[in-house]
Length: 343
Image (tube, rainbow, N blue to C red):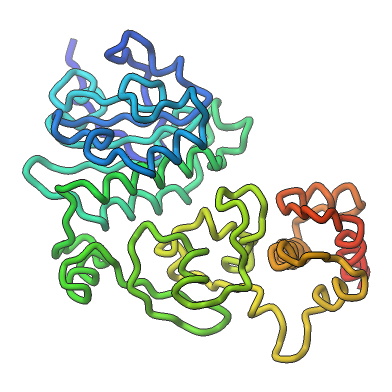
């Protein structure tokens, strides 16, 4: 019987079940992200960069994650010359695959033998995370969305790759961002980033790992967007990307290029407050005020979303549940939103 040649898995493909070196099966690891690294021994990111990134990942996922341990469930370091590499279509190549909780390939980077790893390759792989997962039997129940857990896994894995000794910035016809970084930054690890914020375009030179939140606060001094938990759990850093609510602490600045970004500084029109800002004042919908910018940005995006179901107070509370107020001003926040909704 003629055997078909292996095909490299692409972003959005469902990874085939296989037996891992420790004897476990890939199918048994469904329910949480899995990283598969096909590499020679010298290209093991867990040994090349054991620092705060992996410490943070361990704290994110708890003691069971053990990201530093190459035998852990979330991380499997595999021989790029082995049978599994051939099954995944990357025999003899350095490759990194991120599978989401459903076993779908959501992030990948492949480096040909003898070639350096360039930041543009890693960033392009990260951008693929915005693409919806295919409608498979495994993803239908959850809608194929990307979980925070998968996103954090991918960004931290990308950060580790970008700091490997073999990662260089050089001319690459297939990656204009790598070209721009090499030309304008003299070959360092920063990238030229163009962000359109509150109607104005800003040209920045940023490390590819910088979050949009930090770029807003540290580089552009737009400090209205607050850093609360820095883990995507409190909503204090909420901004608008093309009119949609987004957590800027979980959004890489380079991934916000080409989008219309609105922060709390751009909500009012000059001295004229946004109707929701005025309603917050009338209803005393804040106390310490730290969460207020995020509450306002989330609520305004919600009110302009024509598909949102906001027929009752319960539905509004549910829609706003991602924004925490430690002063517990929730009844007043709800009243302000309902006033603007009725108007």
